[in-house]
Image (cartoon, rainbow, N blue to C red; front, side, top):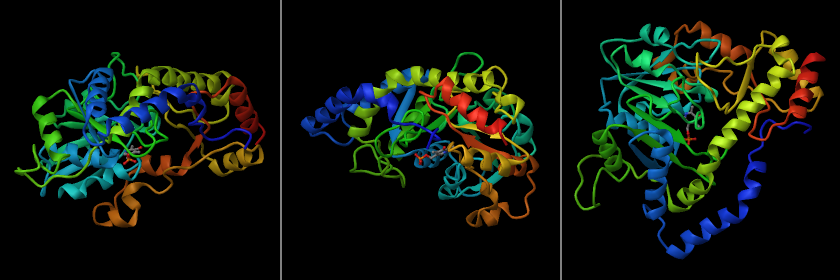
Length: 360
Ligand SMILES: *Cc1c(COP(=O)(O)O)cnc(C)c1O
């Protein structure tokens, strides 16, 4: 492949020694679950996000379910979620007993807006999941002004910066992250976190991830066994100080595409007003996406359509999604294409990709 879709290894090469030492350290400590590495990572990640509390969990999907439970979501409630997102954003809702209600997006930013959320609100709406899709940042304050708590699904937005300099994880009532290896901050296995500024919410999250207990002797509620483990926490602690540099690399990659003239050839992803996305995926929009795919294939450039079938039309969501009309979601599903992006993506690579698109 002349230009790969992403590169998750080059940025880690200079950290190899330090990563080995971190892994050795956990082996020697013989502490594997909820030990000093997780405690330290939780403090460091909370400080990074500008949130008072961070709680490590097993993955970004359970993070959403647990965060919703902590917000009090349960049977009879509705939770709003966009349909143009990774499946897990919505998959995490039914395990709480609540009903997913799908809302539309802004086709330019791929994110929900106060308008698309408002159109789907009902008296039973207990929470809104706003997905910071592809690293963009959904307008959380405008949505919370509608009077419902917002869960930021920040799985794709570690390293992004909002209009006022704040970070995902500190914008809504509660936020969730995934440290799946390909995310902007990736573990060497599964991992996730929940952040919040609310001490009572954080305490409920801590109990829920630990079987609904404080001590595994008495149990307050039905919870989960959902913990970030010591190895992953140690690995994430090595990487966290580099996240901003990698995010700058992703922003620079986006700039390379703009300067090479990609915007004259296809629809570029638009940042939500004022924010500075650390593009997790660089997703263009094209009314003739087949010819774009053909041109990239011919030039040996990586690409991927991530969400051709929106979540509400996937068979397991039929009970909640059948017959729903979400025009911007359908357009994005049809026209989107992720093209190469990584923290180390170069100007030369951008020019190669743009030349391939120009040649179609
Ligand atoms: C990756 C992702 C998740 C799920 O995270 P996992 O750690 O894979 O469970 C949830 N939402 C979005 C938007 C994601 O991209």
